[in-house]
Amino acid sequence: MQPESPKSKPPFEIGLYSFAEITPDAATGKTISPQQRLRNLIESVELADQVGLDVFGLGEHHRPEFVSSAPLVILGAIAERTKSIRLSTAVTVLSSDDPVRVFQDFATLDLISNGRAEIMAGRGSFIESFPLFGYDLNDYDALFAEKLELLIELRKAERVTWSGAHRAAINDLGIYPRPVQPEIPVWVAVGGTPQSVVRAATLGLPMALAIIGGMPERFAPMVDLYRQAARQAGHDPAQLPISINSHGLLADDSQQAADDYFPAYVQVMNQIGRERGWAGITRAQFEAARTLRGSEFVGSPHEIIEKILFQHQIFGHQRLLLQLGVGTIEHKKMMRAIELLGTEVAPVVRAEIAQK
Image (cartoon, rainbow, N blue to C red; front, top):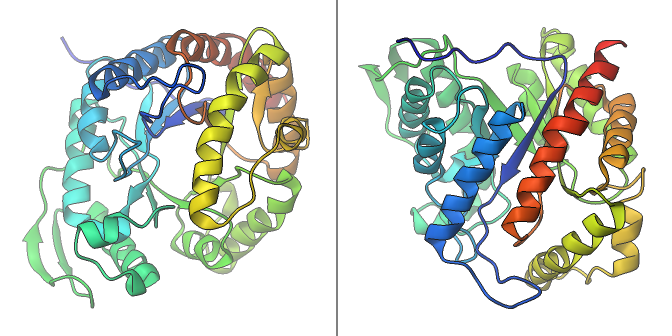
């Protein structure tokens, strides 16, 4: 029997991403085992597939509070438990990886999943992978630009000839296996740096824009810049999808969602803030961030629908990915959030946007 083919794309895609945290529970102080965290993660993506969500992305991190240093292995396991949901990284830290190996891993995932693999490439929000794999942080941007160029070449043909400054040249060598899809989609993840936005647009690659703080309207110039740069490079902006990647959590009751989300969120964000010299986040700031014009998608299904449609008026984007919970959220609450997103939010949002 032939495997089931992936579903056609809806007018607006809604999905999830995760970093597979193994942080302490903010209420109990206990930390689940890495084995249990992965079992919970796979179960949650299986549910996301069943309730009709479109995409799942898994981050790559090399820190003790995450269990996703090898995301393609985890995505391969998820592929065997799902049928339709597209499988991506969020992100592949391309600067400290080898593009040939990245392509081979994703082509293999594409074969296992019957054409559901995507690559979300980025420079990474943490820097641990650079010393770990022997790269110079001073080459941060140059490494990404060169390796992205090679990755694009690897998609085009079975045999590749290429040379650059930071990797050994390839002289008419075959790259195997080849994927199911004619070209595995490559998204460029950006955090609001104009140079990264222009790079994605110039290359004609879809852009994933992270909005995890501040008012979303502040990011509208980045989307305008992306479309303008794409047009100047000879690409049709209407053919280049944009994803907004944000944080959130749903519950049947808005206040319950906020109360479940905030303790873990503030624990993780303030830890990162101490490392980077940011001020701590207060409950008042968080409550402001989850209002209609804030960055956090935390609330009831009705509130999340309203917020997605509000941001769609600003950006005209084609995809939303939510990290449900920052830090450790009780598994049954996470599963309920996924159920609500897939059964109550996604159908309404898709129908509203399809009518425009």
